[in-house]
Image (cartoon, rainbow, N blue to C red; front, side, top):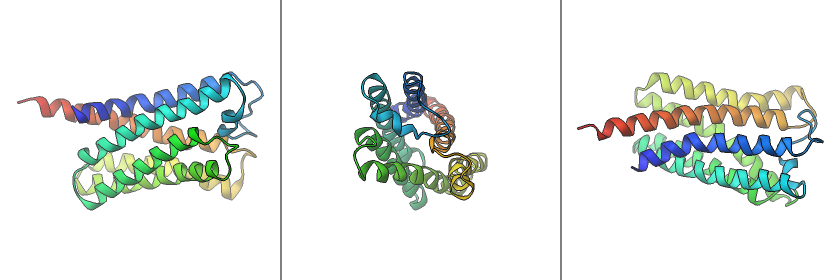
Length: 197
């Protein structure tokens, strides 16, 4: 039952997060993908800030449930526990981004950096956990996801292809979202098999 809950949260959380983000973008025509940060939406008075901040808080809490399920799903090896723990830190950082909007300095900056650092690192460690579990396909997929989550930031700080950070934030978050949905589906399948006598 716990794995089923965690897997379901892993599927719902990223869909919910990007739905709220897109709604916040749509509600604020002045937003520019090239020049703004996504967090700029969290300080626009009214409906926009509510959509953005509450969306991140709710989805971050669902992500945390998913990360808690990873402690069970990945097993008791040190690398597995470490990967799940770092993923939980990323989830808490996501909640904190919504709790502490951009005008709460320097807390917002610290938790934002924390999320985009912890996410690819957790995926990299979990790729190692899958490798030790001899789940090579999931290990490779998770490694690709980790690279995809980190690459927009590496490019941003080396090339500065945009003036704002909305695009690297969105691409990095999308890489994590795709990985989470796929893993959530895998957890649900494993939970279903476990029920078969």
